[in-house]
Image 1: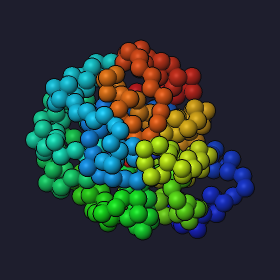
Image 2: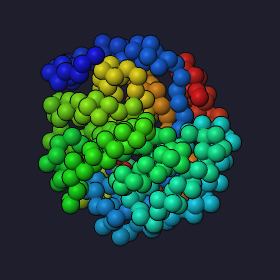
Image 3: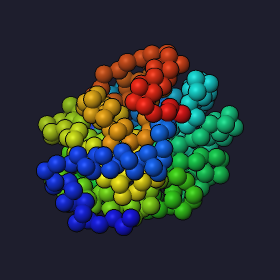
Length: 319
Ligand code: SAH
């Protein structure tokens, strides 16, 4: 279906969204079936040289204790997740040049050789690095565009531009990665038009997956007093993306779950088909504080088993 800006805007402004939610659920079932993909996420470093206005990891936050996992530690954590049953590992970090092209490449090689799919989410790097990691076996790359408004992008990311971010996404796509982008709900100046522009950008980039999460204020950032993003608008955006691009992988994002557990559960019947679970070792978990959240640590196998039960209770198939 062609993505039409006017239609997205009128859907978002509709007094009753029920039919869109239902349609998204039906289209999800028809296009990608009942499977919910479980992804294990390892947050391997909270060092970051960037200063994103919304993010708790930004380099101006001096109160955060910083950590870096050793490559061996990342590999063994990945193998543990793998043996617990996870088929995809997402390796995420702040923008941290400590991890060179070769270091990341070696981690990717080790993990892919165990038969697991590796998704990288380490921010903006060079085309050469993206190409090298692809050759090492990385299959997916996640880099959210955050906002399709170039002026807002420049305000939130001093010294950086949306066009640089989009060039990275284009390079990633060209290299044959399954490409993930996404944006936040609740950024300054949000309206139906800006959400439509974000959705259209995902389509233009020909994304294979998209993470849509509500903004959550972090007390150690300049956006500490800004209102959190709406969970209903987050669900609406996920539904519309499902309707417009039925084959995409769309997670019920962790941020949505932090804002509202029921809304998170509901997202699976409103277009979502992916669940991401943190498996970062306990001693680092609370330090990867993009936004404030309650930290629960459980045995990785037990946790996966209870997630599978949760998915089954929704009438869906965990994988
Ligand atoms: N450095 C990596 C990972 C960034 S953190 C990168 O640049 O891709 C992962 C995601 O968390 C971001 O893309 C952003 O969309 C989200 N995020 C950051 N701060 C947030 C906040 N305060 N509330 C909600 N989501 C946030």
